[in-house]
Image 1 (cartoon, rainbow over the protein chains, first blue to last red):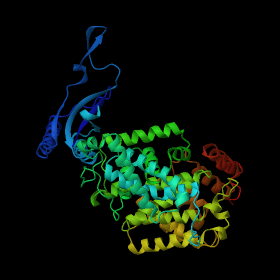
Image 2 (tube, one colour; image 1 turned 180 degrees about the vertical axis):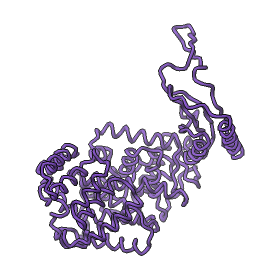
Image 3 (cartoon, rainbow over the protein chains, first blue to last red; image 1 turned 90 degrees about the vertical axis):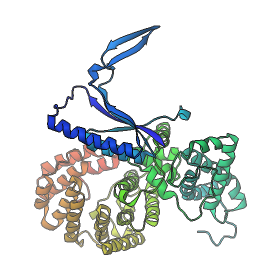
Image 4 (cartoon, chains in turn orange, yellow; image 1 turned 30 degrees about the vertical axis):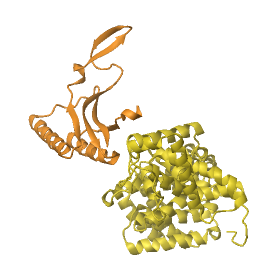
Length: 120
Length: 410
């Protein structure tokens, strides 16, 4: 079995229209059904949606000091919006989950394999 | 070929030819056994070195393909033992999962099962870019060297090696499966496979220095047609390639120029290829599950029936383009349909259709307009269209041809 990251990214400045109450409910329901399916199939490991990228804090080494700055990585225009970590037999199985996820959240999904410890 | 010779003399080139013919099957079998493309490739390469040493002296073994697979497998086992990677491979499980994988020590290579079908579906997996699909297919299944693949696509060898390495790394890391897709997946998964073979053929057609790609594509299409006899579009692709190939020598003479369909010496068309292609088209018609490749093959079959351009059954060709446009509604198909309509209803009717198309960066669009404009005696517009076409043409031969005002066309 291989572990895969299924992630949703949002592009800075490409804000979407806020969902109406009803849309939000439908969205939550679709996602709930999907997560239930992942769990009962044994594919689910972890996942969740993230707050907006402006809630992020970056911590980095500056010499021997730890420097803390407000905001997401300044270098990237794309920010992680949410993700699932799943376990699947092969890429085809992972892509099948990704297809269900993109249908549920109406956004493109990036699929990436995790390194095995032995591959490091 | 040389069955009368008692002891056929083999030189290095002949060994290379036989090897290339057989290596795809061996690589495919060894990937299943060892679960790793690099192990399989290296082992078959080693077997090639042994064959180069032994065959010229000992003569060709009775079953060269079996010899290569067995020799390569033994080399791989030796090497894995030496590097004590056997246990490692075992503990990680087969890197490429084949569904019924038993990743233990290599099993006997099955004599009946053909693994090439798995291999081509892995090489042409939709998670790989088209460039990667083409490179992997030619390298692993076609047995071309990295240098040959690089030369075919005018890419530096180092860049091609990198492209192949990246693709193989992705197959391994993302665990792209090594199996033939299920029936319900087949429509989506077959499409890139057929597209890769067609692309290889067209790359050969576009570069007269690499005609080997044309025969390579036909060889791949034949393999597919043998392995998937029930897929009408596979048969359609093979027929299309055979019929196109029957005219290649007349279309692109050795001087590198281009001869249009109407100007070709039809006596030089290859009748054996035409007959084979037309027989497949007839079987497709009986099966009556038309698709884009079958329809293009049928169009080519109609051309092949006509002794001259004028005797062509153009209404039949228009009818086939109508069907093709229904299954593949692209502007390029619409352009070709318009050309056929021009032969039935005249240049003005074709012009009306062509002017509606959005193909401004496609040089055949301007070449077609130029030809129609000239037939309509709109000469200065025709000249401008030829110039536009020449500016966009990808090869010197085509540019030259168009600068001469499509010399040859009416």
